[in-house]
Structure formats: C-alpha cells, structure tokens
Image (tube, rainbow, N blue to C red; front, top):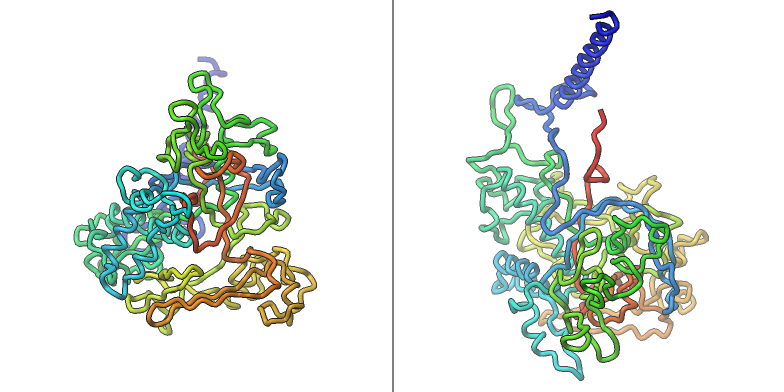
Length: 559
C-alpha cells in the first residue's frame, strides 16, 4: 500500500473518530445541563424535562397548516364598497385547524358531558346546561315552514355529521375550552398520571381542568388523591436522596399537555381557507386567489366532474341548490361535512355550507402598520386569582357566576374546578412597552382614545353629553338587559339619537359564505360581523390550535 493510500486512511479514521466524539458529546448533553453541568432527569431527584420530545402530535380532528406570508384581504374589485378588507401583507405562524366544521354529533357529546356532570335537575346547575344549548329556533321564518329543522336538525342522527348552527361566539369558545380539557385528560390518563377512566366518574365537585392541573394539581378532581396518584401508575416518579417518593405531576416540561383548542384568528382562517401549499405563482402570492380551490369559477373544470359545483351556496333568487337531479350542489340547507373536495391543506368546507365564527373583534380596519405578524384584534389579558395564602382560587359549585346576555339568555361565566380569572393590573403592565392594560379590543381603532392628542381627563363613557358622544368613533347603542329574582326580563333600551354605529367590542367577525349566501361571500377575503352572544342558522365554527416548536413538520436535522 503506497503512502498516499495510508494518508487517506488516516484522514478517514480521524474523521470517524471526531464525528463519534461529537455525536457522543451531543447525546450526553441531553442528560447534562450545558449551563451548569448538572444531570437532567436524575432518578434521585432534580430537574425533570422531556428531552425525548420530537414533534407536536396532531390532536384529534385537526390538520397541520404550515405558516408563511400571504396577502390578506381582497385585491379584486370591492363591489359592495364596504372598504373593510383592503389588502395587506401578513405573516402567520404554523398552526392546526379542524378539517371540517364542528358537527352536531360533536356538540351533542359536549352537551351530554355537561348534563352528566352538572345535572340540570339541580337548580344550582340548571342554567349551565341551558346556557350551552344551541338556539334551535334560528330556523324559523315568519313566511316559511321550518319546524322540521327546529325539532330535528340538532339531535336527529340524519343530521349528525352536519355542521352545528344556532351557536353563539360565546358558546363556541366554551366548547373549545371543554375540548381542551377532555384531550389533555386523555393524554395524562394514557401516560399514567391519572387513574384510568377517571373521566367517567367526573362530577361538579370532581372534574378535570387543564389550568388547574398545571397550577394546582392537588386540587384537580376536587383533590381526590386516588385519581391524581393512581396506585398502578406508569409514570416516572422522583425520589429524594433518602429514598422517599415525591408525588410527580405532569408539567409543561413533560410535553404531554397540549396547547388549547380555540377559535382561529381571522388571519389564520383566511390563510387556511386559501390553501396555498401547492400554489406558488406570483398571482397567488400577491393575493389574486379567489376561492379555496384554484380558478375563478365555482364549478369544476376537471374532465370527470366538469360542471359540478365545488361548494354549497345559494345559486340565485329562490335557488338554493340547483335543479333537482341536474347541476345540483347536493344540498338545500347545510350539507354533510366533507361533501366537497378539500383544499390543498386537506381542509373541507372553507367555502359555503356555513359561515364560521373567528376569534377577532370586528373593526373596518386591519392595522397592519402596527403589527403584521399573527394579527388579531380582541386580546383581553387575564391572570389567575390568588388567595391570601398564595394559592390559586379554584371555583367551587357554590361560587358559579352567571351572566345575562343582551338577548336575555343566561350563561355560566365559570365552572367548578376552574381557576378564577381576573384582569391584569398595573403590577403586570408597569413600564411595559408591549401592552399597558388588560382589555385591548379597541386599541388603535380610530377613536379618540387611540389618538396621540387623547387627554387622560377625556370622558369616554356615556354621560348624556351629546358633544362628548360625537367624539367617539364607535358609539353603538348601550342596551341593558337583566333578570329579577323571579327570572323576569328587565329591558332598558338606549334611545339616544346620537348613536351612529352597531360596531362595539362585543361584535365578532365571521368568515366565509353559507348555504344562504351568494357566491360573492364564499371568497375567503370577505368579512362580516355579528353580536357575539347571538346565533343564526347559517353560522357555525371550527377550532384551531397553535403549534409549538419548528415551523415545518419536515424539519431537516443538521449535523
């Protein structure tokens, strides 16, 4: 063997040894802190951390949407002259969203859980179940027959896989919160942190709440230790140097506790609806994609399905589906979810069927000058209420607070087992530059308080001064509805002639067209608003979830 080959072999051997050393050092660093050199996940106690976490698991019903930039709003002509969706460039973080709208079957499971945990036969809990019920009377029309839908649409198996309607924005948010708890409860049960089938024994005094488990795990399930610390646990436990066992609860560091199910933001919904994963043309990037599918028409151009409608919407006056048996979109009211082809993200029914609630408070402007990353309007920041002894305040069955909505319906503000939430105060906002108060719904929306010349002594509330009222940009009517001790409605109407708008902090955006809407509204850029405590027969919803970790599911590992 000549010297040249020997030299090459030595170089190769050196490379192998160096790569082995690097690999070993990297592997060992997972169990040893690069900050202190201390061991992580030591069986004798110390800092516990899931160093084997690879990827956020896609939660039930969701699909992954990789984030990126897009043109939010409408580039094409605004024939309605609303001027509320001017195009602006936004960047969205990766997230997950339901592959279809929430169905009647899914919502009935929620109602069944509420009914079993908070029996409506008990007076203290009656309004919890009633407050979650969809308004089935939304189907009625003064000059139309709809009693069949009123009586059957929600509960009949024939409509089980149809999108739930008659649900207000407030009810949709509560459903998402319930869904979060049930999913995390299942994860912790599977990992051995909770007694198997504990969910089947839930009651008003003993049930699971995610925030309570994170902040005060011993109070979960009403403090029932046999559920929180099962005898045959499969989880890892800590021991002290003396060999004593320490109760070990799953924390955020475990990777087992999922981010919350929630309503998607308006920007997320529009981004997901456009389905741009496979379309990278200049026109698409610049916002000239009109529908969730490719093309400018509502009918299929594919040879096999040419002429078929691609969504469920109103064809024209007196035409909700087309001629029977020919050129029909397959539905007169709503259609079963997933009846039409999904978009390129694998998401169904982002056009037609039902319009959908999103998280945002409505304003005619999208303030991209202040923020163009994960845009949302509607942030109200809360914190946990703390008792005098420093523990968190967990709601008991006797401490439920009920709110009377503008339409007279009563809903529970909080449920037993949850941590009482209060608005943030100056202890959290002092000298902060990113936020200075709890409620930011009307931040920079064009009113006097948002202007540079706003004075601290400016009266923002209605004091009867007409001059004062005209300075406000959104001075909608301020009706007041209460119930007396006998349950009778006490209605106080705002009769001021100075009201100039229906926009306020309690109206929410809904997106997409519905079975009642013409094709104009199935453009994802269109936006409308509706009171958050009211419901219709054409607005449903779907949930979303934030993604933790890498932007892409196809991340490349670099040596």
